[in-house]
Length: 132
Image 1 (spheres, rainbow, N blue to C red):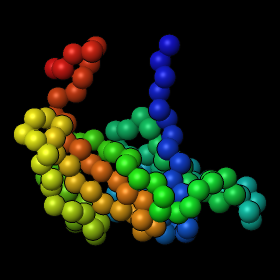
Image 2 (image 1 turned 120 degrees about the horizontal axis):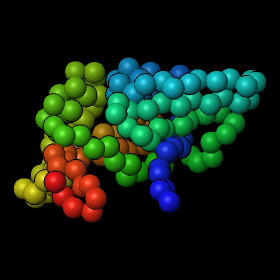
Image 3 (image 1 turned 90 degrees about the vertical axis):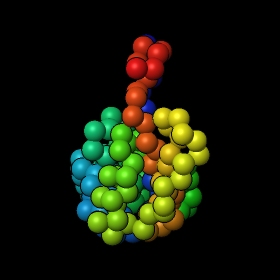
Image 4 (image 1 turned 135 degrees about the vertical axis):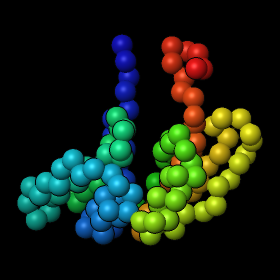
């Protein structure tokens, strides 16, 4: 049986501001933005190429805005990813190389509420329990 991670809930204070940040600045696809009534709205976005989405909302999400820490995106070219983020106006740190092995390099940024994200560079992906 597969256990797949499909959704991460992101607590935010302003849905429209967050929608702009995640869709326009990060390039996430807006899967849906549904308002059920004046107290309930659900927004789901997915990073390019990801099988996991993020969800934020009004009336459905518990947690204080800015408390999400340590969520990690993975790219094959960290320099290119950093350049894209900078071009889109995202305040992103310098590349941190923790070691020279594949998977040892990161960049970090926060969303407008202070939720913290990491981007890791992995050029070779694990398949079938072995590194390719």
